[in-house]
Image (cartoon, rainbow, N blue to C red; front, top):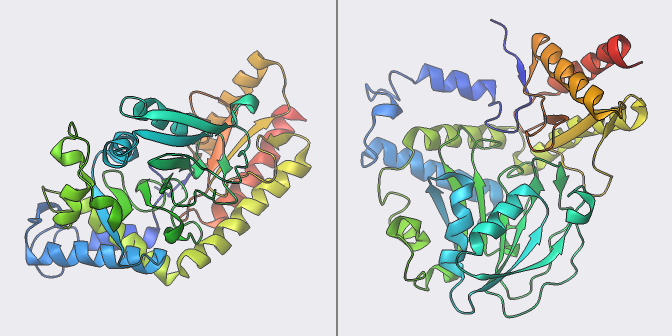
Length: 366
């Protein structure tokens, strides 16, 4: 069967070169006579795999030695609790910027452990823009942002100035889509299943001075960053195969120009879609310029009657899937449609989507 173009917000498409390489090594990884799926995480062969993955993270994100690189489990959602448990120690107070569902979930979880000040929010316009915050100041243990909003399709085009307050960022849906100055943050984290690899592993990069404090007393051992940093992410059995695939994806990114190369690639793809949407008259992007994501592009037809629009959206998603363009439905909480253009999505997929837009408009909209 011919491969489809997968526009899912996650798990997302992976580079075909990586999939082929993993298939070639499925039964015998580098003459060990076993699959990585079967391999002991304490073995010499696996030690080389996880160390290479860390080295590639450090290279591609220019991570200095003053930061630890961790490969954890539990998805980005577990980080919503780990962050306040590990960082909310001295003042038990944190600043959050609310830009949508994922930031909102983080706020809700953090409130179980610390006092949360929402210092800015875009809720007034249904989270369709990124609020601009010049400076975050106060007696906060940390400040928190979600750098890219997969559901609403917004993205920070600046990094808030938090001064000496450690800045924490959920970068799950934009990690390595463009260069990022890790030194501007105390901690970043990313679920792998968008730009880094398959679901099952979460990347955390944390400044070492933030590991020197003892986490809150109620913190489970497995939810302590120090637990994992002290053991090189091998305190317990890690998601071995997911880390192996992640390493291969990182090498693919490196071979294709690194973060700078990905930004060029992603800007070209996103510009094609936004230019078409802005000029279409039939479809439109839901996010205004200045806050638009390169990774996630929600869009609607010009149909304004809610019932008719919902039915038209369902027809669009179904016929697109038949045409080999899958997972274009918007998030269940907002509806509409959404195209996610993560690093592995080729520009041919974007051109195929535009061609489908044209044909669909002739049949149903114009």
